[in-house]
Image (cartoon, rainbow, N blue to C red):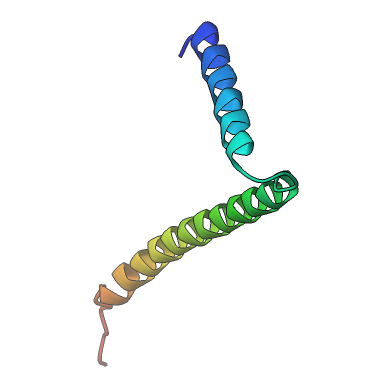
Length: 76
């Protein structure tokens, strides 16, 4: 993505934010910031759990493949 396009998207996002704030009653800015922060933290936590779960599944698959191997036993 070009730098110009990124700057334009950033500017458009800022305009969107201002437009939404204009529709809401005064004093709601703080509430929206708190809600945004909470949503961001929830998304990070969910993503972290998903990555941890995937990594855990990889280890489990490796362990299960080791468990499926047959060991040779010699009887004397």
